[in-house]
Image (cartoon, rainbow, N blue to C red; front, side):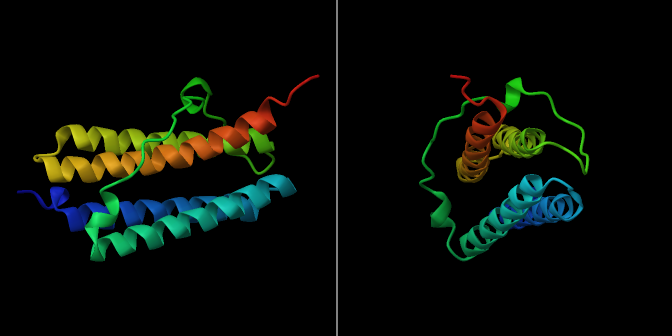
Length: 152
């Protein structure tokens, strides 16, 4: 059996992904000129640290991954073009970029679930995908609120 399918290795890779997301969001927050973008990405960086803490605790108790709820997936990210990263990006573009990154993470875990050699590993990847979709849904809600304000 390949190490890439060992549950501990899977979780450690997921933790590295959260660390990479933290680094990305922190860098954008530090460089952005728009104060709303700075604050949003600083908050996203904090969220990624929370995800890392959760996944680290799953190393000690993989049962924590067993009952991830299936939430809505609005598919806003899928219908939104990926904006270019810029220090001058608007809050809507910043959220679009973040939700696209969460979408990519979810789709990556879904692909790994399809290739998993057994049901246990498949379940871990499916639950990691659900976690990323929950992040994406949260960002999509913010994006819709900022990007499409009501015009009444």
